[in-house]
Length: 155
Image 1 (tube, rainbow, N blue to C red):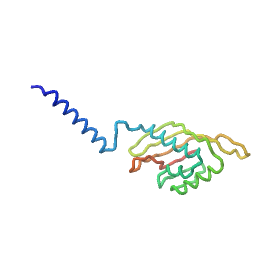
Image 2 (image 1 turned 90 degrees about the vertical axis):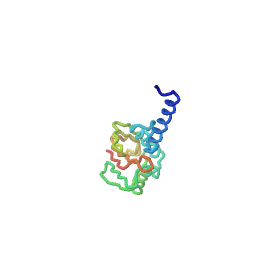
Image 3 (image 1 turned 180 degrees about the vertical axis):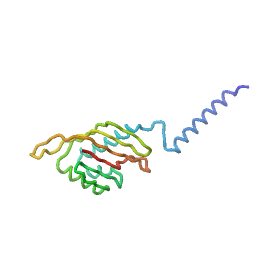
Image 4 (image 1 turned 135 degrees about the horizontal axis):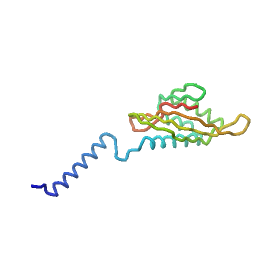
């Protein structure tokens, strides 16, 4: 004998509730952002802080133990030294930073980004010139679900 339609409807509803609870329990939703969307969002916040000349907000986008390696090869570790680095650089007049994503790859709680960057800055003769190059960042998802930069290196 076939199941009554009311039984099938109730079973379907219970199945949907169980599925939704499973998603909530794992912290995953059907509408989760793609790795590229996550990186784009982080890049927008990064560019915004840079272009507002806000070194403190820039440093807040890094993990507490992050590493930054600028073209000089200097290795800068930790938020406070990273904030100092960006404060010094921004104080020299760098502006109009933009990032163009080349490649994004997610591995567990980390996302690797390869991108092109550009910015305006002093040319050494009192004028302004365009600087550009490539960057690599590794983003790490924290326990709170927020993505922060763990490693940032560029040329």
